Amino acid sequence: MQKLVFFVGVAGTGKTTVARKLAFRMPAAFLDRDTVGGRFVEKILEMNGLDVNDRDSDFYKHHLRDLEYDTTKDICIENLAAGQNVFMISPFTAELKNKAWIEEVLQAAGLSKREVDVKVVVVTLKDMETQKERIIERQTERDTWKLEHWDDFKHRVQFVPEIGWDIPSSSIYVFDNSGDLTEEKLETVFQFVQGVGVEV
Image (cartoon, rainbow, N blue to C red; front, top):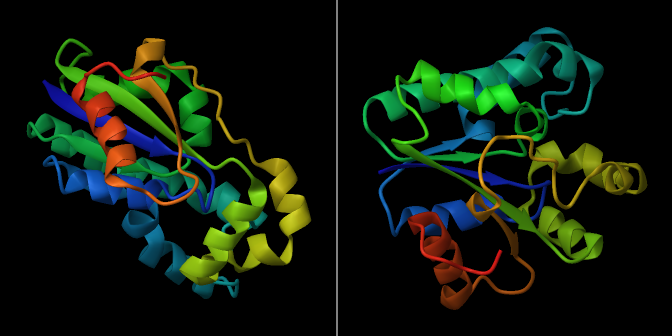
């Protein structure tokens, strides 16, 4: 059975790291929304005289945010239709709330939930200070706004997003990524994705 796994969570929780390590253990198309859309988003921002690293401006949210997500979705659909497992990495905040979104993805790929096992791994941290430390450590220019407006940013994020998709609760795993990402911790995520029971 094909796997469509979403690694979601706010900035700095380590969702890309978790997904990348898991990708070494099972074959999957690895679609990080930042990588898929990063270059063209930066170019469009530059052409409009805006900060190429700003993902919090009204211009980005109104003109580019959905473009990035929809492009990533299109690549996901192509890979599903070609019989591949897919890892999707991004917050997916709006998409997770939209019950029809996941149905549209599967329908566009010519597949159903009987053929594709949809899983959501919500990567979290216990506290915002750990999150801030990880954002600083990864030294990404896109995080400049978040760090400069930390008090505002930390009040806007949700540790566990709202998930409105029609999937069983057993297909959602809230994974605390505090501390070192050990092989034992990674094994719990792997077993969850593979469909082996873990505490969720």
